[in-house]
Amino acid sequence: MPKVLFLTDSLSNGGAERQLALHVKYFPKEWEKRVLSMSNGPFKTIIQNNGASVYIKERARRFDISPAFFIWKVINTWSPDIIHSWGWMSTLAALPICKAKHIPLINGAIRHGARSIRRVLCKWLGLLLADGIIANSMAGLKAWKIPASKGRVISNGFDHERFKLCRSWNIIKKDAFTVGMIGRMSFEKDFSTFINAAEYIVNNTNSEINFIALGDGNQKQMLLQKATPIIEGGRLHFNSPTIEVIPHLNNFNIGVLMAHPTLHVEGCSNAIMEYMACGLPVICSSGGGNHELVLDEKTGFLIPPGDWKALVDKILYLYEHQDISKKMGEKGHQRIIDHFSVEKMVGETIDYYIQLIGLLE
Image 1 (cartoon, rainbow, N blue to C red):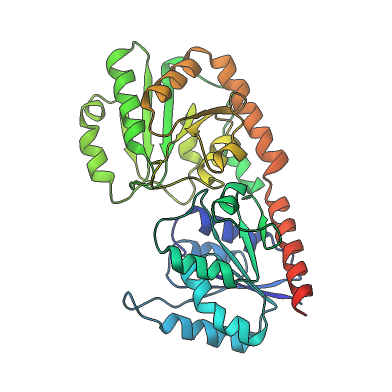
Image 2: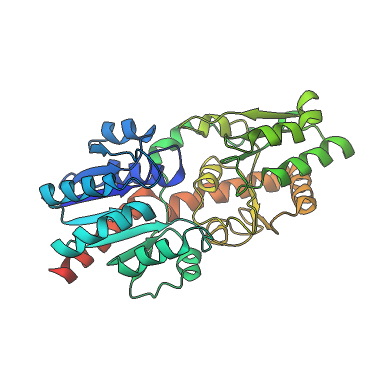
């Protein structure tokens, strides 16, 4: 029975953690799977329920290196056939023992569509020394200049079991039209542009469009203050996310995802995939992996980052042309089924594992 050890920096409520849980859930039974994380989070229970042992070794302080020793102990004792890391810290921690024991190490930490400006040297080292690299978008591989001989693009997968949670998108009522954006409320995710568009539509048009901002983060209080007038007017609601966001998306007619152009570029966005799976037309920032997910003017619109006026125009267009909005949503839904299935993701991952194991034998 082949053995794979998944390493991750965190099991918090995030896109990478969801994809890791899907790997555990849908890997064939002949693979033995274990997960080791450098911090706890809500996905621990989900992964355990999907049949994998989970080890947690948290750092006691910022420069605590004891998790690295724990990783070495687990690897030395269990001797996995391959190690797939999802974070830059866990990658660096595993590198020495992987080299010593000749265990192939895959670095799966490229989750964005542009090079990060933080800890670049640490990330470069992990990419340079890993035996293989998986990115969830071609934009990510190109941004880090990873050669085709070393890198592989494997797009995120959408769990087909979640489709049953999606209500029919055929029921669209103009008097209850809602535009929503989900994401971590940090500088990287551009909720300010979303709020600017909402303020303009509420104050300058006769449309009955409502807005929902779904997320938590260190910028939430600032955003709440910024949006106070339209919140008090009942046209914008701030909701807190749960592990499963689709019940929230069932209240949307349009899914929006804007990113700050100098701080963040999406890779293969889980949020956009969830919008499309729910049959929602998508309006999102152009650039990065969004071009690989959203077909402009077919499943939604790609607009310049930070351009709230363009966002207003596209929202109003879809509001006034709900037949087109419905068709875009249907095409997006089918695109997820055809190109972003979890079976496709897992199959491509296993093929890559087998290739790397064979090269190092």
